[in-house]
Image (cartoon, rainbow, N blue to C red; front, side, top):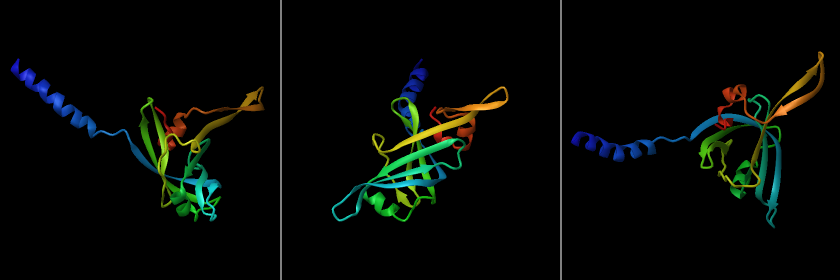
Length: 161
């Protein structure tokens, strides 16, 4: 009985330490193409205070877009990147306290991007579309915004579960 109590006491103190070392956060490297770059706010001297980058995940199947909004430090660093450029990115895939996985871009090229989970300017749009066929003819298309196996296999950071 005493051995069981010692084991239980040890688990109470050791288990949290072990679990604390386990992180659900993962980082991925990928590349995006910049499809829109827009100054949202400018200072009186003309310097950019807030910048939006809309990027397309060319390596991922379907249409995967991400908009990131950054402050003046990000805007100053990102000035060297233009629409059409392919830029490496670091993606953080992390557990959201609301019960699902999220992702955000931590770095665009060599520019740090502070993750702001509640930023109204940053968002992502993900969809896969396919033709709708009737009697051997294409009569339209259908799109879905849920990540599928093919997408998650090539771009695991887009997974939500």
